Length: 421
Length: 171
Ligand code: FES
Ligand SMILES: [Fe+2]
View 1 (tube, rainbow over the protein chains, first blue to last red):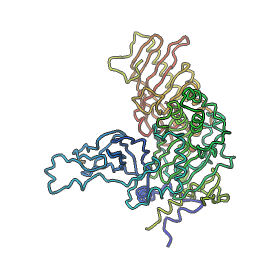
View 2 (view 1 turned 135 degrees about the horizontal axis):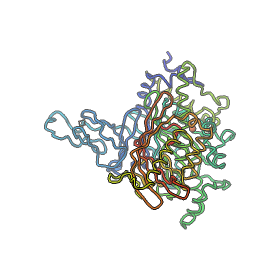
View 3 (view 1 turned 180 degrees about the horizontal axis):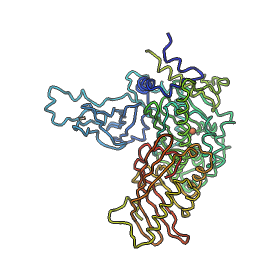
View 4 (view 1 turned 120 degrees about the horizontal axis):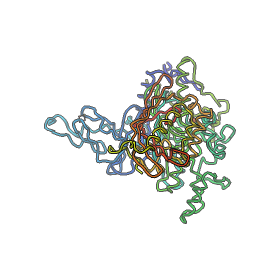
């Protein structure tokens, strides 16, 4: 017997109810977000012992912390006594978490350390039995993921074909480690999968982002002349992941044949860095070539994308509401002028007042509204089906404006929503 | 000159005619922004003006951190172009806004500048939804030969560190 959900996703189309059905949303939380590996942090956000930040796994609030031994912990932000959240500080450094209600206190790894006036708990409670709930934690190339599932496959296996691209993405550090430099947060009224689809959708870029294109110099705009560039391709990487290459010359930033002219808009940086005698011209060139980030968007199912020069993190809030974070990245220990330039580039496109994000959000909101108006009509994800071929790794590959990445994500969605019962 | 939230002991110095002229400029600015007359709005600025909507409300060094808006003349003009050029779908579908600016306090006075802190309440409306954005605003008004001009504007949203959802208008 075929599964009742399997007809919702076909190879070239998905049902409109995927964006609107609250029962489906509940199942997605259980079957996808509370089961698989979900991105929660970058290691630079919790670099030192005692550092912590709040995050989400699906709809569940968690704390990501670095303990005294250097270990990374992901803890459900819920007191074991009567359920209060033990942390409401978005990020900080401390010795642990004390619940404000009756002051049960927990260590950075979630161990229950202290219960005030313990007399009432004699022969009733053993502290070792009541730590904060710990999630399984995995980390790859500084990307920290967590899972509520104890018997989940190893993170490396889950990332699979995406690992090569994660490694390449980190090369934008030009020899320096990548660090988080801040984030923009905004919400849109629409289902989370609308944003999931968007990361490897280069088809919309020159249309939705026309006003951004008009505001940047011609070199930057032509760098993104994807529509007519045959080397701009998308690969399906398995497990719902996909990568969409927009600037082939920057797909691996360590590779430089020397023909690329550095952009004029960065000449003030070249000038400034040249004053430092420890900065050979090759190193300056390497840094400047990386200023726009990697030449691709990598989509990691289900909640994080590594997009050119930033992370895009999505959090499903309800079936029709999604929160987005655009995390700005910099060079840890790198030249200040470079990190500032990266911040300005991020501000130019991202965030609620950026030149790009508000137009994306408007389009996504239109999708939600339009779909609800014709709920029996399918969403088409068939662009490029006729020209999709396996690359030498056997990964389905098509043009960057094709919908190969979406087909890969929905294939994973279907597997997770229908496997077992 | 101080840019912190207003101290209680300072108030609108009515003996200084520049204070009233600054307030009237701020009111005019609010009017132009609600009317989406962005070209006229750009004309209120002094050359080299800085327009900032920080994420960190305590921040004073904006260059070294991420902001929602951090504009010099060039960026501000490109922003105006984006909002008026007809190529942006969010600007075309921008929320209607009505804002009031009040609780003026003068927090700094120098020979040719005056700094005014105020509260701004903006009510926006778009597609069946009405929302409110509140902010502490600091204006530095420069009195040059061509009258008062905005030399710096910092908009500190009450929810700047939370999810901020703007739709195609300026603060
Ligand atoms: S709810 Fe946390 S100590 Fe009581
Ligand atoms: Fe976009």
